Length: 464
Image (cartoon, rainbow, N blue to C red; front, side):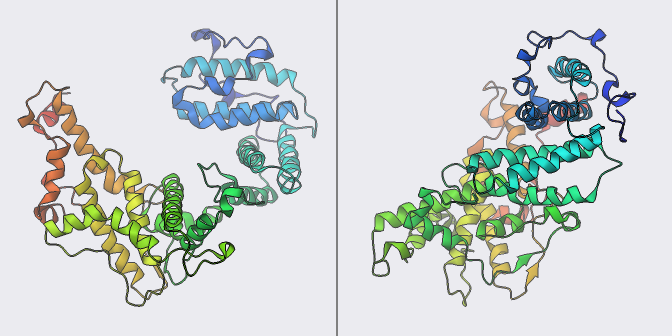
């Protein structure tokens, strides 16, 4: 395609690179000879090309409004698909790319520009028009679910704009993009509680116990703030905002954002349910000014940390759940509960090893106490992977999971003698002894015997 102002009418080596309808068969239903078969194209995307689904859905959404921009969206999807799998080796990838290429060749000649004389100007003007019409003017009139869809489409259009006009990209569109990315999170999907939805509050958020739990999580006063990694610091659009204690734990320990949102909602519902059971108290004569019962958080802590406290007693360890002397709120207790829930949320199969979870929490609780008891204004997070939000998963859970996976491979679906491989209980038993502190250490030592590759696996890797 021509990246200048001439649009796609000139030579297009990037559009056709390495692809031809001559060397592949088109799958059933991919003929593309009439428009009726295109409406579900986003549902035909192979699993390996899943990231292009939002682009194709955006193309379908704006088809009636501007067919030329819809074509540019599909072109961008094709470019991304080719970048992701240039050799079309994934299952169904070659057929899908051939179908999409056929659609692009057809649409290039049949679609007309409405707003400008070139594709570059067309996408720029449509992007500006779409943002103003649906995001600015529609903010007070559209429902949250509609706004979520419009923000998603606007985000896609920005990517398309950069693809079509990489050399003539104008800074004024970057202003819209920053605002879109900033507000998109406010209309994200949710399970039960619409915590991030802007505009009119939903009825469920007006329940007094829910409001009290939300207020409790949003008390971040006095917490030192984690320093951003250099990659995020350079990108102003990626600078995160700390709205509550879970956002703080996310930036401090490198949990995944989806896990953070799920466990935040989980904890709010747990607190609200416990508080409802306790009923009104002396501080809550007015339901509109509901205050969380003083024993609600302590009750939840006793239940959640029952196994951890038992584990500490068995190993004659001092619990690392410590409250700073100057703590005047229940902020530390909420942080410890949130930390445990976030660990559990990303633990995958490691959840079947409860004492291993205790070992992980024991050390991370110590890190947490060191941070909140320090008087500094900021600090370097103990877990960090530049430009990524899965540091905890990769640095803590993944190594342990790999051991479990290797041991399971030794099992050969139950045909191997139990004495030749370790199951969940065997691995978990390692954390019932103080030797794990000496051998595994923290941060975990990858050279420890616990991570040793089984001899059978090692032999097979060498032979292959």
